[in-house]
Amino acid sequence: QGDAKRAVAIALRNRWRRRQLPEDLIKEVTPRNVLMIGPTGCGKTEVARRMASLGDAPFIKVEATKFTEVGYHGRDVDQIIRDLMDISMNVTRKKFTEQRRAEAKALVEDRILDILTGPPTQKEQRSRESFRDMLREGLLDDQEIEVDVPEGAGEKGAGGVFSIGGDQNNPNVAAMADFLNRMGGGGGPGGAKKGSPPTERKKMPISEARDVILDIELDRLLENIDLKKESITAVEESGIVFIDEIDKICSSKDYMSKSADASAEGVQRDLLPLIEGTTISTKYGNVNTDYILFVASGAFHAVKPSDMLPELQGRLPIRVELNGLTEDDLYKILTEPVAN
Image 1 (cartoon, rainbow, N blue to C red):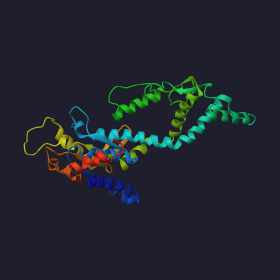
Image 2: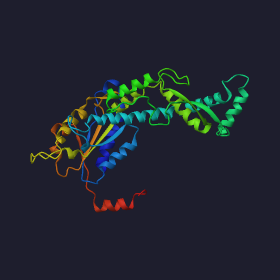
Image 3: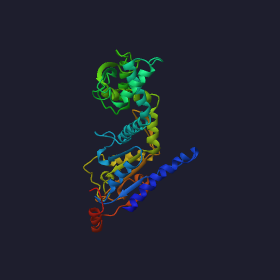
Image 4: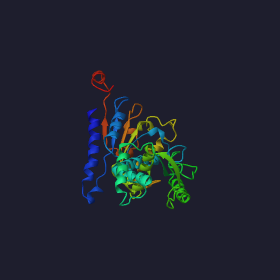
């Protein structure tokens, strides 16, 4: 499917080119959204999967049929951006964690040595270094030490003190739960600072304590980084949304009977501001969708692309038609791939 791959590759390349422009020009360049049309099984979704695995950009693939118009029971389209923000937070945290892992490992070694030999002094420097060599060789892995760990660290999530009912994706609910957990964490027996989660002392072998202390040190190093701001920037500048089965929310103009899904036409109306550019409120802050790249795909068996709302057609300017697979293609699929 050369045309589809080319259109998607150009769209991704343009994201990179936009980032090289001077500040005053960046605001002027908006992404050209793509609409892929083709019969079932010709590789539309596979193109999306390959897109996801290429860059470090936050990427989400959604089915248009899962959403309903605002006011109906079900998920509204704003949820797409909220889910994309969750993905971006994970990607950003992972990126910064990897950058600081070596620094954290050195801190872990010093913490364990402090527990074993006490704070470093000039006199005991030689014995401390011998302990360090033994630690690196794994000779002390069975030795048990006492470690201050956050309460409920092994239980679900980050060991929150309070849990609140309701939709956790609602920004107000999330902010309230975060506030209560911070207020509740007044420092535990381990002498934790006020505002940090309460800690408890646990006895464990050094082999296990190493991972526990590494997590604590990484969290401490990441405290100085505004992860929310970094994640929002990543979504706004390089986020990609792939909307599959977009033809299922169209109804044919030939017969004006209502489709089974009463809110299908409304989903198109809700998608309009999202694709055009609007501000969505998430639990991490407000996200502007002006520069997010949208790629839509559909089989368009029962309906035509012209049955979509005219404004929505205008907001998906690059249209690519994928060809149905032929007998020769099937032969290539069966003989050329190495993996399956």
